[in-house]
Image 1 (cartoon, one colour):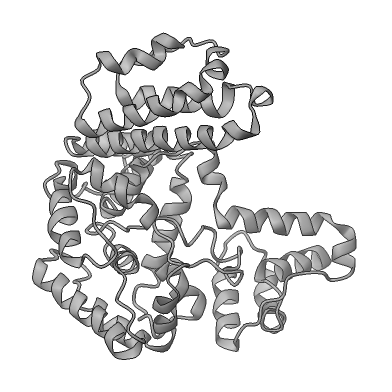
Image 2: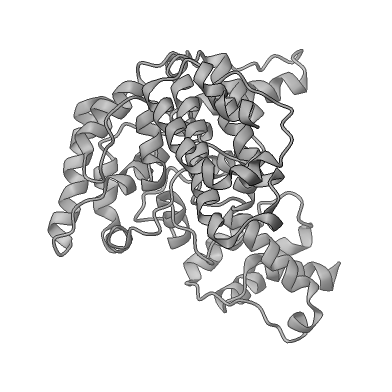
Length: 410
């Protein structure tokens, strides 16, 4: 253990990495006896792997029964420091990585980073891109803006809408989005749907976006973080979605001064400007292989690579630290588990004890129609559309109604 703890001294650390190492060293003495009881078999030779190894020890191998309650905050802080070390090192790697390394890293971390869910979210938003924010039902608008609610029925939204950036804490932003959606549409219209996005396009968006808050709020400043979510969902190939939680490590990894939640100019010039210097971002669009002789597996791989390329800027998120618990924190998976628990609870079913969510007729019809597009559903359910809509409008979830009908009709 002593050899592991001291090994970064022999590494060529950047200034930021050395600062992280020193922070870790300041926390380790309080845990030294506990750490010394762990047998170390792996001695990494680079800083990111060192942080990963020590994080694994802190999470899985240290004997928690021997820890004092007073040591738990120190252990948690050490884990946070080490996780930031991994994130910063991986962000630093991005600055020099070519496309093959970029895409391979994403695929290798796809499980812990819930890549399937993230791409499902992006695919869904792509499928409704012809609708304006003002035309969208509430659930779709919130999916675009990054706020999960119980209204996001698992039969339709088979993903956590808060992947990439949650905006649930931006209350004024959501109030204005609900009441002035047309003005947000007008702001986003300055960002081309395809092709190059230049500073003039971005600046026009910022001016219009800030104007919404100036005109319709009680002195609240327009938040940058929520704006980056809108930008990244409109153009995931051009913009990085930010949150306060990940802002510092991204800025440190990109070697730029930390932004604040009002710093729109630095977001473009420093963060997006740095992004646009990276080799992987300049990768040409992968060619679609549609020839008949190409194997199905090769076609699938090509389609996946194209999806990654089309979302390459927002996928910077996947270079942040993640472990086995990251994917399990999905709001979608939590709702699935909740629904399964209720289905297994015979008493709850007997009492019709399901969560009821008030919906408009428009919302109920839209959600039911989207759910019925699932090719795995039996044809007879198509003829039950009106009955399903009525039940959903009355407050039941689409998933619950469909399951009940399948249980009754087979």
